[in-house]
Image (tube, rainbow, N blue to C red):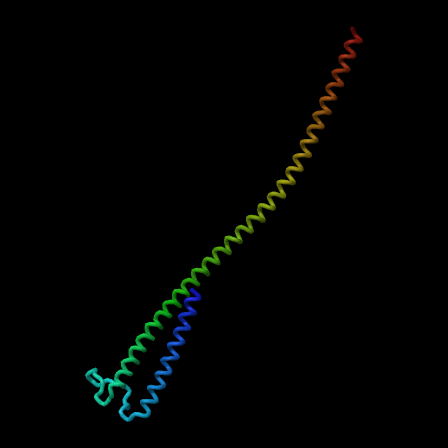
Length: 159
């Protein structure tokens, strides 16, 4: 789109420069010729004034064609610029949307990191609790075994 618009703009400038040169030449001819006096080459009926030569009428028609062509080119440029403006607005909306998605992802990553740290702390705590529970179970088992041994020894002495 950008290259196309630049190419179109350059073509427009070239045509505008050529048009301005032709317009200057026409103004020079108008200044030198006594028959060119009015602002329009057409009379009231829409025909060219009889005081003009065939070459002057031809130049006039060429000028009118060039003006119409320039108008078409200008309209094409206007449409291109409007399309470009629409694309830029759409792109702006997409950038804003993507920015908010990135912000949400960043927030979620921070939350995950926090939850993982808390999970690690809970695992360490659970491991300590589990180890202390096993230790207590071993102590209780040994205590019960000792008491049982004492009863066994006392029962053997009684017999």
